[in-house]
Amino acid sequence: MTIQEIQETAAGFTQQSELNQIKSLGIKTIFDPPILAAVSAHDSVFTQLQEPQIIGNHHQLPVGRLKDAATVISYFLPFSEDIRRPNRVPDLPAAAWLYGRIEGEELNRALAGHLVYVCREAGASADAPLLDPEIHMPEFTSRWSERHIAFAAGLGTFGLSRSLVTVRGCAGRYGSIVTSLNIPASHPRYEPFLSYCSICGRCSDRCPAGSITSGGKDVRVCAQYQDGIKKQFSPRYGCGKCQTAVPCEKALPAIIPNRTQ
Image 1 (cartoon, one colour):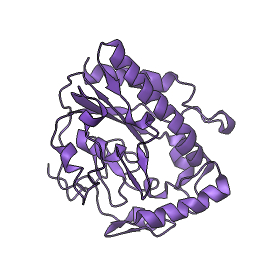
Image 2: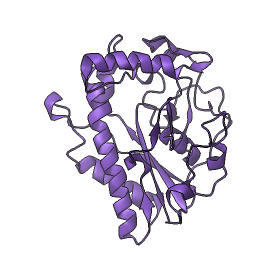
Image 3: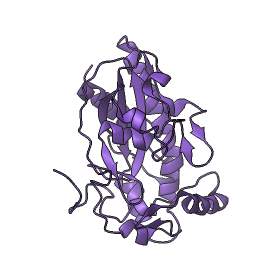
Image 4: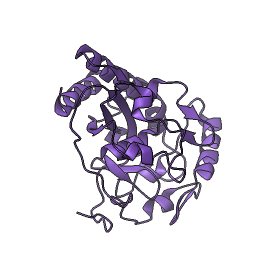
């Protein structure tokens, strides 16, 4: 299989799934078609992610997920206009965003499972870390960071808000699979890690918690704010103000001073 074939499969599943809608809000599409990228499971970037200043040695290698791992496929599910538009206003997160964040994750998990199925039907082995209940850890870290995996695959680079900025913007959800399929790497990686960020500061201005500064994002301040949102809107939570009404919401910023190409 090629990455193009897998992308077509992922797009078809996303468009046809009943999970990709919020009937109670009249929203017919949570996510636009995903974009995908592949990277060798043996790329040195995965050992780099284990460095203490990046994530740490608790972050798993692809071969730790799948013994015969050959490729990691990462995907980004961009939120639709119906999810993004209501959240452009200031103050509290829009209901559409909260539903997209929680109900949308059901579609994300279903897509990961479907891609595992597709790989297995092709005679390969596959694993979806997203479906592992033990992947998350306390203290704002993970054994498999989907954003960092997307960076490793070349889908995008980080922004000041520590969202990942892709050609389809930063507002959306990420997932990945590890497979024994041999698929050529599909995207280059850019250095520095803020290559797609214009450093405009708009995400900082938008953050109701004040968690984003010129030095980056304080994840604890952000989490404390979202804890308050969950108390108000449980079982849903989220915010997304730093991902909406910003130049990188749905595309790359028009001006990117750090990009090296």
